[in-house]
Image 1 (tube, rainbow, N blue to C red):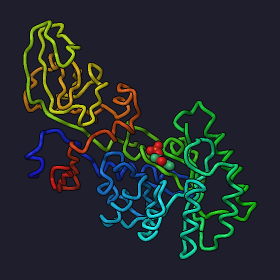
Image 2 (image 1 turned 30 degrees about the vertical axis):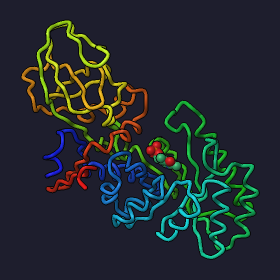
Image 3 (image 1 turned 180 degrees about the vertical axis):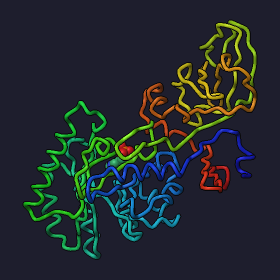
Image 4 (image 1 turned 135 degrees about the horizontal axis):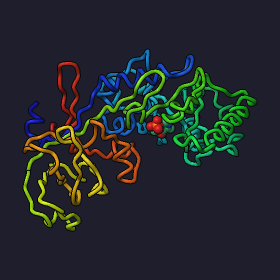
Length: 380
Ligand SMILES: *Cc1c(COP(=O)(O)O)cnc(C)c1O
């Protein structure tokens, strides 16, 4: 690959077979007639939305959901034919564009509903209506329901295809807030139904709620993070595995005496004669600065600690305890047992952000059967 030949040996390898297996494991775990919505926003959480979308099949996935209209259009332009859903919010121009490209929109409040109803004077418009069941962010709140019902009633060309909500705390099994949100959602659904408004589709579960078994028969489940394997997760239908491996190589290796400083701020001093390796990766690539003196990498199957500060373009590790280490050795930053969740805990964030922060400077390499494709921002 010419792009890889001209690039640093720092890149992320995306295992599309694994991605497809994760989709399979999750889809098969859903209750009767429930269907998977694959959430590919933010470039499929940094994995590359077009590449992973090409591995989704209509018999496994009902829709692809993204956050932005631009993300949906990128998939359409790449020839993705699966139904697309934009979580929004959208401007009026964007709503028209979405409809023109057969992209389903989630309407997140009365303001957006007004725009949709204006457009529905001249054409048929199908939407999913979002309810705020307690998160306080997007969605129609309970006190807004009468106005929303009235608006829908006087707009005959508007069709409500789906009704949905989103959970704030589904990843915390000890917190009863998800059950409270479900009760709020059901109460709001009942108000709509009493007014003669319902939809053929309903959905509320994200990854955490799906893995906890909250999905109802016949519903959709909007699953994002679990598709990518933030750590290894075993459920009844199989094991969800990490899809992305972020690797680099040792470019500089030196022997330093005890008491030698390492890196900016001289935050680390060798306690013994040490072998220190320098890696061509840094916080500009998304390797968080909070991992300074606070992470491990894999070299020759063993863990080696990050020592000193993470700089913009470089990281230093201590390989004193790994015999025979040499320049050119492969180093795994994420993967091979180092999960996104591990790096997230160490850098005080969540696995989602660990994935999303792997920057465009890091090429994505796709092994697909016998072929290798490279996606690099330097390739154009
Ligand atoms: C991002 C998102 C999801 C997916 O959440 P995960 O926790 O990644 O499964 C589902 N629904 C909405 C509305 C979202 O914004």
